Image 1: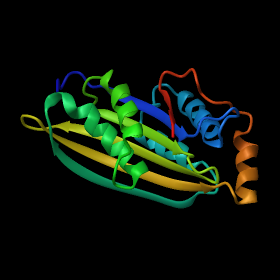
Image 2 (image 1 turned 180 degrees about the horizontal axis):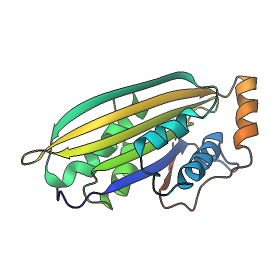
Image 3 (image 1 turned 60 degrees about the vertical axis):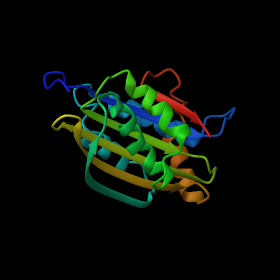
Length: 189
């Protein structure tokens, strides 16, 4: 990695079935994109992403963890490794290929990013939205070794709870899907 070329990237992704009407996850994602775009100087700061996600109300099972992963890989495999870490949260330890491949493809545009924030809203189940925020920081090691620090935040929104559904509709109902954003990825389940 070139120590003088620091590349940071961010990606918002919604995983869910094809639908004629916007999914609640798409509305929430659109609102979060708008919120993070308000201050371009801080829109890739991991703490800004974490604060924005924690503002989504009525979270069930909210959890934040931090870990450092030491990986050895060929130089060109960094996008795939970062995508796998992000997709691992969705797959519960086994990253789903339909999530990993699109994220890896997106990251390939950035070569070897030194930082990557990825927010995945998973609404494959119509009654629940799972939010997975992964903030990755990559440090160069010797040879093909990379040290990746990962901060993971996860939460679930229970849409079958009428109070939660009503609150989400009140806050995010006016937002449509963020279909034309270059840092947005819609993944069909």
